[in-house]
Amino acid sequence: MKILLIQTAFIGDVILATSLIESIYKKYPSAKIDFLLRKGNENLLQEHPLLNEVLIWDKKNKYKSLFDLIKKVRKSSYDAVLNLQRFGATGLLTAFSNSKIKAGFKKNPFSWAFTHKYQHIITTDKNSPHEIERNSKVLESIKINEISKPKLYPSQSDKDKIKEFIKNDFICIAPTSVWFTKQFPLHEWIDFIEKLLLKGQQSEDNSKVLPPNFTIHLLGAPSDADNCQKIIDVIELKSKELNQNNLKFKVKDRIINLAGKLSLMQSAALMEHAKLVLANDSAPLHLASSVNAPVCAVFCSTVPAFGFTPLSDKSFIVETQKQLDCRPCGLHGFKSCPKGHFECAESIKTEQILEIVNSIL
Image (cartoon, rainbow, N blue to C red; front, side, top):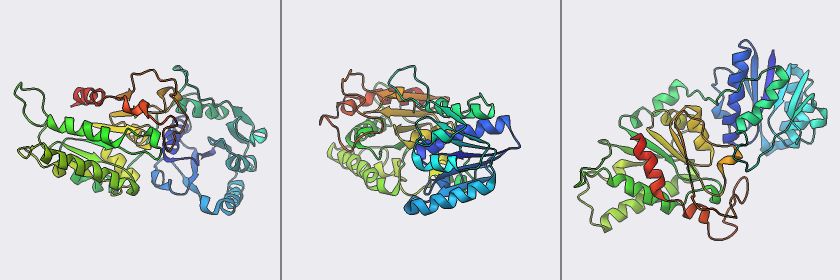
């Protein structure tokens, strides 16, 4: 059997789609599985041991690249094309794929040409399914009912790259997000890290302290490096202002800015060794789940009921304890709070995160 999976959305969507790779392999271990994604995300899957080929759609040359892909897909004579995207371009590719089985979602404008069509509904119902459950509906077209967890496979070179950062106990924090309303504010991350690091000082009541040489690795894209550095600079300045020069460590030695210095797969390799990964409702939480790292996701304007929660064996969720009529304000977030107060994030207490960290360390 030759199967093509299509997911040309964002990084987190591609990671979640690896659930289907695992399910197909378990049912049909000799199947040739190809995966089509958008240019820029290929690093996630290029060395995936269960994939035969990774096809890339270059959206900068959108239509030329699309029609080249249609020709390639038609020549490949797939037994099944399973499309997880709900937009027209990939629907067109699926419709003209020359495949025996063309499965996708009813929302796709070209679903009329699919042989198998399924519902994909996102609601705020607390009992609504996870995204991997919604995606896995398309597997019914090839007689698969089992749902597997997403999984990525960092290469040996990825693992070698992060060796210097895993010598001591550490947590990872991915503090930023493309969407402002999905991001726990930087001043809150700063407050949390300050409180956490102060645990490293033996208190008079002999309360729990951090392990020796404990470090915090800040992760993100190159565009996130400045914000991550700001976190370090503010904490370092505050420690001096509060006359805490008697700290048993230097702030810059305890908080390491790795934003833009590691690839996605190198970040995944690092997360695999972390005591805990802290992230917003963004791609890093799915990256952590893909290597089964303990993960805590902070939900601000979005809600867990949407179905994009962490899937690691040790998974935690932090969100506001206030009942807000304006939350959720949207599925993907906004560049600013529509109401102007950003209460869904500002009302989250850093103690909520500290409680989870204390339970792990």
